[in-house]
Length: 115
Image 1 (cartoon, one colour):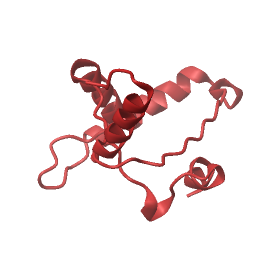
Image 2 (cartoon, one colour):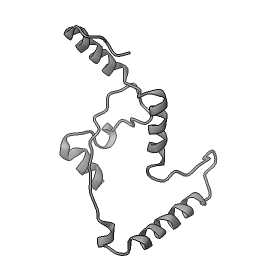
Image 3 (cartoon, one colour):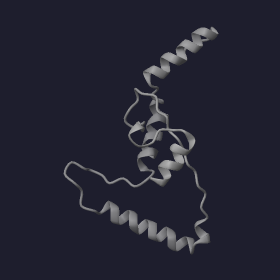
């Protein structure tokens, strides 16, 4: 909730039920906020020990028993990495409403519409 408040509410972006999952909804314009923090892990302890602990945790997650119908357990960053690779190959989906708006701006300016 704290991250959501910092990323959403503080900057006037969507929060809670207003949030649109942009990974699964290419038709609606989102109002997504961001929160960024830079943390020096070494300031808290040994960096190698931290990395080893993270690796162990990821192994534990992946070896967990899955719910029926779940083929894979993702850790943070994996789905976005897959999305990035897919969008690099196939392009970035643009919501129809946004595309209509951009086409209108292009028309108003007398420039080519997006393809």
